[in-house]
Structure formats: C-alpha cells, structure tokens
Image 1 (cartoon, protein in one colour):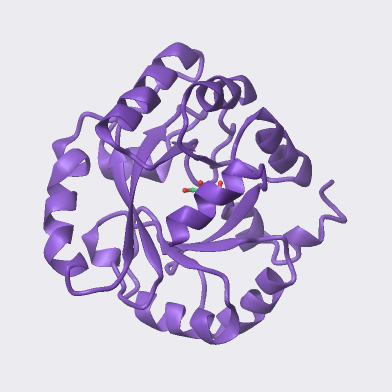
Image 2: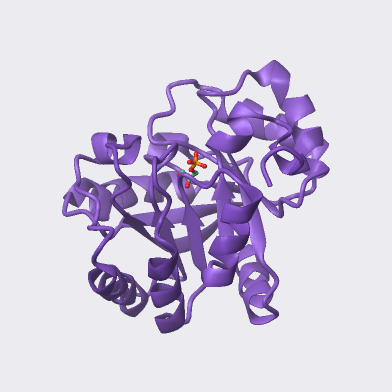
Amino acid sequence: MFYNQILSAKNKNQKLLAVLLDPDKIALDEVAVLTDKINASPATHIFVGGSIVEANSIDELIVILKNKTSLPIVLFPGNPSQISKKADAILFLTLLSGRNPDYLIEHQVNAVPILKKTKLEVISTGYVLIESGTQTAVERVSKTDPLDRENSDYVLQTAQAGEFIGNKLMYLEAGSGAKNAVPLEMIRKVSNHIDIPLIVGGGIRSRKAIEDAYESGADLVVIGTAFENDPDFFNFNSNA
Ligand code: 1GP
C-alpha cells in the first residue's frame, strides 16, 4: 500500500519529500514540537533510522509521531535492531555499492524472524552509496567503499543490477551530513534508465537543492541534517 502510493506519485510526477529522524539525535521531549513543524512542511513521509542507533527509543519515538501526524512512518534501518512494529513500512535495504556480505544478505536474513512478527510493509530497496568528499557514517559502519562520484555509468549499472534483482526502490545516498550531495547529472542518468522510483539523499541543504534533485529525476528527496540543525528549515525563507 505505501509502495503503491510512491509508485502512483511517480506515475503522476508528484514529487515526494521525507524527513529523516535519527532516534539518537533527537530528544523524545522535542518530538511533539518537531512533528508540528513537519506537519506544516511539504514533507510526505517520515523516515526513522540511522547508521548507528544506540538509543533504545525507536518504539517510543514512533508512538509520539503517530499521535501527532498521519504521515507514513517508514523505517530506514542501519541494522535489524532498528526494527519497530509501530512503524508502517520498512525500506528493506541492500547495500549494492558495497561488497560486505553483512549488508548484502546477513542482516536481511537476521531481520526475517523479527519482521515476521510485525505487519510492516517490506519494501525491497537498493541502496547505493556515492562518494561525497568526506567519509560518512554509512561508510564507517558498513566498512564499504562508496562508488566514484565521477563514474555515473557504473552507478547506473549498479542501480540496474538492483532493478534486475527485484528492488522496488533505488536510493542514491551521499551519506548523512555529506559535504557534496549526489551529482545532478548522476541522478538524471539513473532516473532516465530505471523504471522504479528513485530516492536521493545526503547533503541536501536548501530548497534549491531539493528542486534541482527533483528536476534531475529524483522521485523522493530525503532531508535529515538540515532539519536537525534548523527545525524551521522547511519555512524556506532563509535558505532559498
Ligand atoms: C541520510 O540521505 C539521508 O541517510 C539524509 O542525509 O542528513 O545529509 O540530509 P542528510
């Protein structure tokens, strides 16, 4: 159902926007106020997760969110410990850019018994990490190298392999807080040559950068750090 909504938005060329909340970076007593800001923003989805979530507060965070918003809550987990049955859906990620079997199949296998006890909609998602100028948490935690930001052909080939494998979404990721976002020409190339919806995130910090990503072919843009640093980010007054 949530996947079908994303697909139908893509078919209508309606662009989607997710706010990423990392349970380790927000205090639970701030969530209600932040959710009001999200409700007043153009966000269409809330993603919850991070590379390392140490706080054992994902369930609690989602309960507060659910009380305050009707936006879909989608898990974006760094590992199976971040699964919460309180969410609506989960991006079931495969780190296609890396060659670490833990992030290609081990975590996925370990997640199954947990997922089978939930009603979460599981959405197969190819996750492709692109070099962004500095080492990001995904690189560090997954112990994998990102793909060369100059080599769009290889990034496309990787995304197409994910599509052939059966991924339902493709996520081009520069990494949270990335110095440089995914190059626009890379977004364009990938979006022109895959049929599944394209998510783009990492290092996007302005309204213009969001618009540029959409114009280049992103179907859904993810904003994490910019909103963490400035809860008024979506007012778009100071950063246009
Ligand atoms: C990270 O793509 C997301 O997984 C968001 O990145 O924190 O840089 O917005 P930022």
